Length: 204
Image (tube, rainbow, N blue to C red; front, top):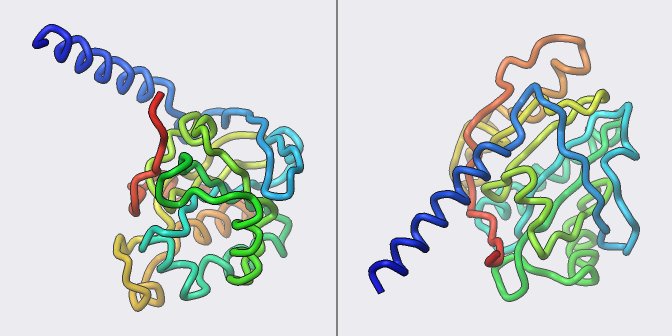
């Protein structure tokens, strides 16, 4: 039994090391992907070449996600930046039976209820897209530039709490990064530590 436990532990450590080594890094090409959105439409990262793309990991039941949706903060960001030509892809990687898992119909009802307006919501119940980007929390934000390079990876802002009252006094890293990038300036904070609920991946 001890040998079996040791072998399992070693395998978990090895998988973690491999994931860390393969994790996408700022300044490197963002991994391409094929997915399906909540309307059943195929979505490819390559289809948005030439545009800035935001990836937002999402979980309806997470208090940190609720902070930004129930306050209207995430919806304001979506509306502002998609209005400026940025593609905004919300991603749901919760596995079936886990917190945050929803059907496409449930997600579309949620979008309507919350008046959210991402370009699309990518359904990732198997977690392959989440693992590809090593998404750790909900929310976890990524920005990809028009050349397909990852230029931001991290938190939505600098107040890692679930308190809505913190939003007004926060530095929004996503907005700041997009503003600088669109102005042709270097991004001041290209990588930050994401905060929120852990992404509810299923077992391998």
